Length: 54
Image 1 (spheres, rainbow, N blue to C red):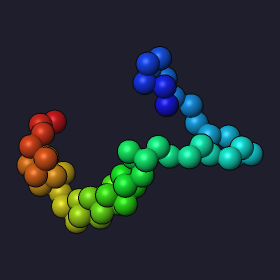
Image 2 (tube, rainbow, N blue to C red; image 1 turned 135 degrees about the vertical axis):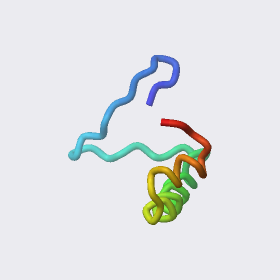
Image 3 (cartoon, one colour; image 1 turned 30 degrees about the horizontal axis):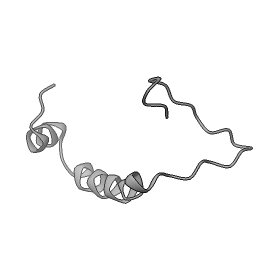
């Protein structure tokens, strides 16, 4: 991901994926946890919990 240029690329299956920066290494477990929590809720409940509107 290039924040300055505003683009990203996918990883090719034949090439090794780049190492994750230290600042985002804890995100995948947290994303799985919140995904599990929200999987048991309706869209309305999720929107209310996150305080967003659709």
